[in-house]
Length: 283
Ligand code: NAD
Image (tube, rainbow, N blue to C red; front, top):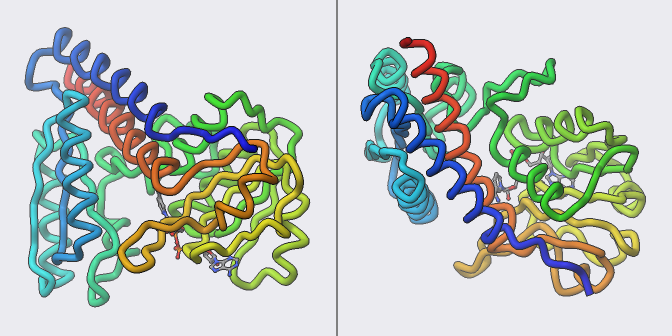
């Protein structure tokens, strides 16, 4: 039986820490320094809508003022980029989030590049060539915190990351390297995926393929972190076949209730850091 790493419980602690930080910032610099987050939603995808609702609630619980801007599915790329530019230049806006995915006619790459790094609450523009991870990509930061809370020190361990996206897989690999792990990154063109995953002391899966990782692909006693979030008949399902893998793992994260709530909590951490930076800059 694996120890279940409870993302929800850890996320509640993180939220409480951020709330304390937000109130301390206000106490020191006044109400205008309160962290805020502008959430941009394009279209009416129900999962995206729900995520924006949850993120809004999280903000409120952590002393962060949320503002939601909802745009229609047909909003042009040009119009969206103009809005981002306006938010970048609005001194009252401390952080910006654009809920992904955006409709296909909008370039995600262009959109993410348009958000000013000093307002990028997702941490997607965090530099990966240095260990200055003040503002980190939320999901990798969340995973590192979960490992720490579970007492897993990755130093010297073989960590295998499945997925190489710019927002999860790559920054995850960098965070692990910065913490002295030996890292293998697998992706859609990897030959013999199971041979790699079976050698993992810590296996982190972010492929977006429901139940891709089965028990035969996992080493006995491995720590398994499931970042995946897929929907089957409306139900959230991870990238790990939980029922078969759980008895073999020493620790595992559930879906839902694992990395998801922790990623959202780390948005709040970044929102607070960006507001702190802005307040210090305005001194
Ligand atoms: P993405 O589609 O941008 O990247 C997926 C990566 O997985 C790619 O690098 C691809 O090469 C690799 N891949 C795909 N199929 C594979 C296979 N069969 N074998 C090996 N590698 C394969 O996705 P993303 O944005 O990195 O997200 C990955 C998953 O994590 C998605 O399910 C997403 O919903 C989820 N996600 C969850 C959270 C959270 O908070 N829980 C946050 C971000 C992303």
